[in-house]
Length: 141
Image 1 (tube, rainbow, N blue to C red):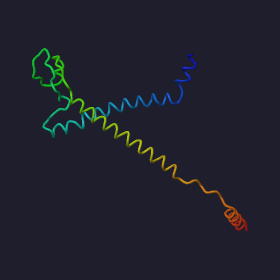
Image 2 (cartoon, rainbow, N blue to C red; image 1 turned 60 degrees about the horizontal axis):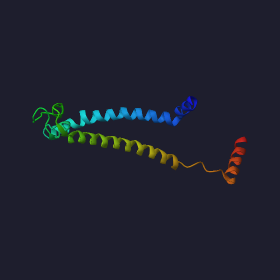
Image 3 (cartoon, rainbow, N blue to C red; image 1 turned 90 degrees about the vertical axis):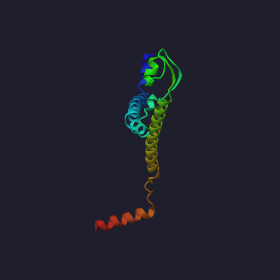
Image 4 (cartoon, rainbow, N blue to C red; image 1 turned 60 degrees about the vertical axis):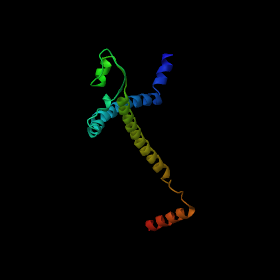
């Protein structure tokens, strides 16, 4: 049983999948940082210094009465919140990841089309063979 599992685990597809998952997780962290640290601050500044991560609706107050300065403060007080700002950040991350994957797939498809379009060398006709023989004979003289 161990031998069969080892054969299964060492197949190319399983290893490729594992590598893809690991790279995908790292790429997700990069995109998350891109959204939180690069894209959202200028957008927040343009919208009057609004931090999307701190946008929420208060559904129920916690142990400490409202208002709460940040989402973190509301959650620490035990308040029930609807965190639509975090959702906006996640949606922006999703759009960026989707666009990046689209660009990669588009590039791969273009490469595949170029390979398919490249014509194979035409087969030599009897006339071509005769012409090559005549050239060979002329070069021997």
